[in-house]
Amino acid sequence: MKLYREGEIRNVFESAFRQIENQISLKSDDYILNVSEVEFAEFLIQSHLIDFPKLDFEKVFVESYEKEIPAEYFPGSYDVYQGKTYKRDVIVYHIPYSGSIYVLRNRASSFSLSGSIDVGIKDNCIITEIINFNNDAEAIKKEFESHKKYILSDYDYLKNDCERFNNDVLDFTIFKIKERKKIILSKKDLLSSLGVPLKKKDNVEETFSIPKPKLRTKVRIEPKVQEKGFKPEPTLSNENYQEILKIINDVGKNFERMPSTFSKKGEEDLRDHILLILDPNFEFGSASGETFNKKGKTDILLKYDSDVVFIAECKFWAGKAQYLSTIDQLLGYLTFRNSKTSLVIFVRNKDMSGVISTISEITEKHPNYIRTEKPNGETWWNYIFHINDDRNREINLGVLAFHIPD
Image (cartoon, rainbow, N blue to C red):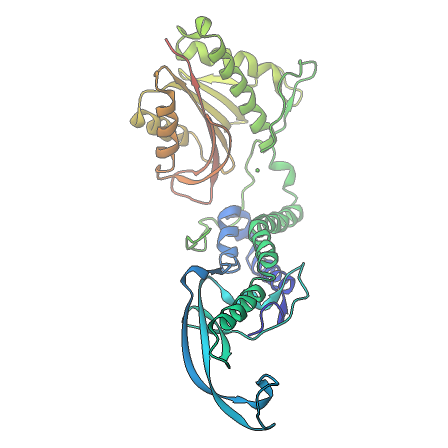
């Protein structure tokens, strides 16, 4: 095998992209409309992710064998005859590796103009041979260093290309699934049914900025969908959702900065203060009145027609069991995919760091948990859960914790 010479790595990437697009195109309209975009994408890319090889030069070992060597290979000082072969010892260096070694056949997008040597692959090792002409150990070691330099010549270039591909292929796949879904919905003339017309109210002081929201060895099973056909469902845009969470976070940080004012407040009082800041910032179209409503003792609710599209629960921290029970309560309100939720935790414990660790640990153990997305800080987590009994109906769960000591 000749390293970095037998193909172009860009052709490997382009082939993977074409295969992924083809797999998406083969799925029925109903499947694309109902499947979880991320879970389907993770399933599609798993066979295309590149397990870039790691070379272990710390565990190199050598063997030797005798071989007939053509006269043309001998140094000029040897008295040999052209066309004849002569026995010589061959030193075989074995370089252990893990990963997909054959990717090293390909030329990177940037490459050197170094020479070329043939290497072999045997028993999870790259093997390279050096003919022992003079029984000179130093000369053999020097030649191996030359071989090693060649083996590593374009290694980092290729590694960077493959890492970039692995980092980009999921986003590419999700984009292509969304693109196909958009085409299907356009044909069905349903796009206007999918968004909740929530907007910022005019003449509200602009004190809150919109945040900028960011495998692989796990075997992914192709996701199954339960529905036939597709029913348009109301959804709050991610931009609006993130802005709502940003406002809640800013209010919560204000609670922390003013403990003398808020430390004696109960859950309902703190909830009402959050509502007081939230409601003036948003409205449904031209409708008047409250956009956010109270439901029960501590909930903040946003409905579209009769459907819940956002709900936040405000609770004082009371341990793992109550925390998981509150998540169950939130999930119980929801039947639609793409619903948005938040759990706002007020912490009176002195050991705030312990509560932070507990939330990080136990949330991912909930049976409806799917994945963790990029957090917005040490006490603001973003999770994807699914509604009860259907993994394809994903919801967003933002967990925000604030320290409000007695």
